Length: 479
Image 1 (tube, rainbow, N blue to C red):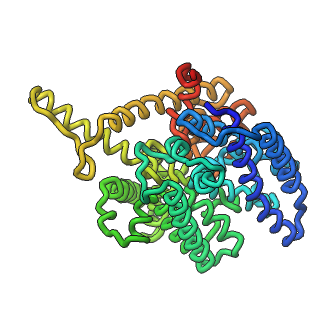
Image 2: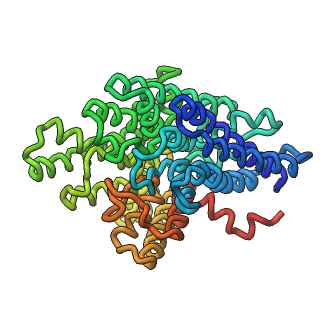
Image 3: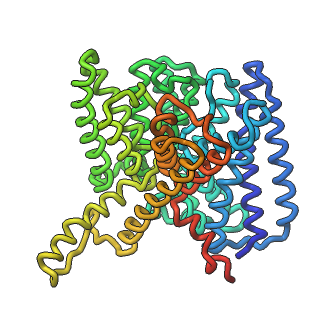
C-alpha cells in the first residue's frame, strides 16, 4: 500500500469539499447573513489540507486496489467530519449531531436532526443541499476526473465507489466516463432547477430541491418537506427522483447516442414495473381509506411516496405514517429494494433483487430434474456466478447489519419499531423511518452515540458492506 499517496489524495478530497462551501459563503454575503461559520469551516479544512500535503510530499503517484478501498472508506468519514463544521460554528449543533447531519447529506440519506429547518440561515441550508449533490454521484467519482493531473489513474477508486454489482464503462477511458457521468448529472440537475422555478419555487428553493431530488437525498428547506409546495412541484419532483433512481449509464446512452435499445434493459423494466405495481396497490388502499381525496390526489401521493422511498430520496408529500399499516409495510419493502445499480439511490438495488428472484425457478427446476443444467440470464446474457454470490451475500449481510443496528439502538431506550426503522433507513440511505423517526419527525432525540452509529451505518450502506469489510480483513493489511 502507498499510505503517503493515500493521504495526499484524501487531503485533496477534503480541499474539494471545502471549495464547495464557497458558493454558500457568497450567498450569505448576498442575503446579509453571517458568513463566518462557513469561512471558519473552510479555514480549518484547508489548514488540515496543507498539513496533509506537506506530510505526503514526495509520495509515489501509485494506487493499487487496496489503496482505492482505503481512500474510499476513509474519505466519506473525513468529508462528514469536516463538512459538519459549519453547523457547529453556527452554534446550532454539537459534534455528534453535525456528523450525523453531514453523513446523512453526503450519503444522500436525508435524515435530519434539525427540529426547525426554516429557522436556519439559507446559506447553511444551501450547504446542506450541496452535500447531497456532491454525494449523489460520489465525491470520488468526481476525483477520478482530476486524478490524471496527479499522475495516477482512478480505476481502483472506481471499483470501490460506484454502487452496484457491476462497474460498466461507457467510454474507453475511465476519466472520460467520470466526466460523462457528471455531465449527465449536471444536465438533469439544471432540468430540475428550471422545472421547479416554472412550478413556482424561488430560484434558491429550486436549487436546493433539485440538488436533493437528483441525488435522491430528501433534504428540504421546509419543515413539511415537499408537502409545503404545490401539486405541480410534487409532480416535477416525481420525475426528477425517478430519473435519479435510474442507472446513469442508461441516461448517457439515451442522451448522447440516442440508443433507444437502452429502454429494453431488464433492470430498467423491473424498476418501472415495481413502481407501477406498488403505486397501483397503494392507490387501491388509499381510495377506501380517504374517500375525500380525488383521483389526482390519490395518484399523486401514492406515486410520490413510492418513487421517493424506492429511489431512497425520502421526501414526503404528506404524512404517510397516518396511512393504513399495509401501505407502510410496502414502503418498508421498497426501502430494502432501492434504486437501480449505477444510480444515486440506495438499498440492495433492483438488479440484485432480479438476480435473487431468478434463482427461485432454477432451484425448483433442479429439484424436479437434478441432471438438468440451468443457466440464469439477465439481458439475454448468462449471469456470472460472482454476481449471484454477491447478491446473496449482500442481502444476508445487510439484513443482519440492520438487525444488529436496531438491537443497539433499542438498547439505548429507543422503542423497537423506531430502532429498527432508524437502522433500516440509515443502511438503505432513505431518510425517514417509522414511529418516532417517521416521515414528519426527526432524529434529534436519538442519543449521541446512536447518532454516530446511524451516521456510520449510512456510510456503510452508501459504499456497500463489502467495501468496509475489506478494512477488517487481516489479508487487506498484509504487504
